[in-house]
Length: 88
Image (cartoon, rainbow, N blue to C red; front, side, top):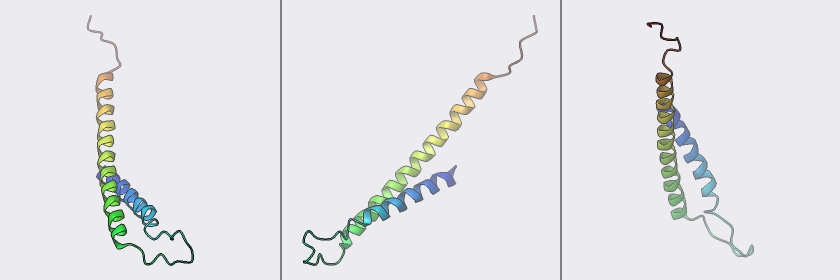
């Protein structure tokens, strides 16, 4: 379960970092004027936000997995034995 949560969180963080970093070096409005180098602060912000999204996704994945496991155990316990009571 932990491996699942970490894997999902890492994939989401990587996708968020890649998709967000593209906006840091966006071209300027006028193609004749150089927009300059990519903004370093933007890359740090995108990386930090991507890490936070990955951690949040990992936590939500762990919580949902534990909830599904707990609910399945409750259903199994409530079902109990399916044989009729023949003590009477």
